[in-house]
View (cartoon, rainbow, N blue to C red):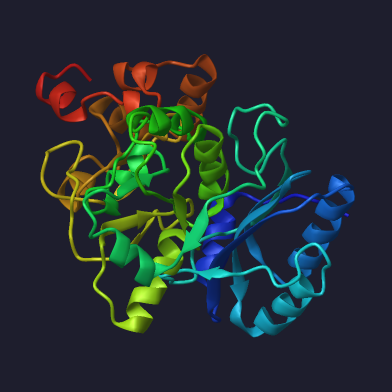
Length: 349
C-alpha cells in the first residue's frame, strides 16, 4: 500500500476547502522506546489514513511527535485507536486554541533519528531526569517572583510574535542552537528557579533534562506548553501572562492568545504578527507581512520575487532549475533574513 501522498498540493488544498465537516486540530507526543520503528510507522499510517486524518508525524526509536487534524465524526474511533495502542495508551492530547479545521491538507508519517533534533549524543544526558511539571495556576504564581527566570525554548521567529512577560528568548534558529544558548544566558544563576516553556511541551522535556545536567536544580517546565496554558487560563478565568500569538507549524501559522501585537511587518515596520511564506515557491521565505504589504507585494518578500511569479510557469521552472538567486534568497537562513524594508527602499531587489 502507498505510504505517502501522491497528489498535487493545490488539489489537496482545494479538496480540504470543499469539506463539509469539521476537523479537530491537535498535537501529542510521547518519549517511549519504539523497537520496530518501520512497522510502527506503517501501521500508524494505514490506520490514520483510513480515518482521513491529516498532519505531520515523526517517529523515532525515542518516541513519537504528532501534529494532526481529525475529522470530528471520526474522533471517537481515533481516540480508541490511540489509547488501545500499548505505546500510546493515555497519551495526553493538546487541542488547538484556534481551529478552523484547515491546519493540514495531507498525511505525512516519517521516520527520524530523533523526534526533536537536539544535536546531542544519545548517551550524553539522562533524559529521564526532567524538570517539575507546573500548570497555568502555578506559572502565574511563580512568575510574580522577580528571582524566577522564565526561558522560551522556541526559535526566535516563534518568540518574536508571542512570549511570556519578561521571558528570556534565545536568539536561536533551531532547538539544538537554543539549548546551549539558553544555558549560557543564565549560567551564573544556578540557584534561581528556572521555568521553561515551548509550544506543546515536547522541547521542554529535553531542555529541562539538559538544564539539570548542567547543574541547575530548581528546574520547572510548563506542562502542555503554551497550548495547554491558553486552555487552562480560559477555563479557570485567569489573566494571561503570555502576550501575543502562539506560532504553530501548520497552515495556520499562529494561534492568537491575546490581542497584543508585539511584532512588526518586516517590509514596512507597521504593527503585524502575520507570518507568511513568500509566494515565490523557489524562495518560500518565512517572514511577517501586514495586509497592506501583502496586497502591494502580491504575497512576495521582494520585487525580485514579484517579477518571478509574474512569469509564465514554464519560465519559472527554468529559473528554478537554474537556481537563480536574488540578494534576498542568497543571504536568507532563518534569522539571517535580509532587511526587506531597507532593500526595497534602496531599490536593490
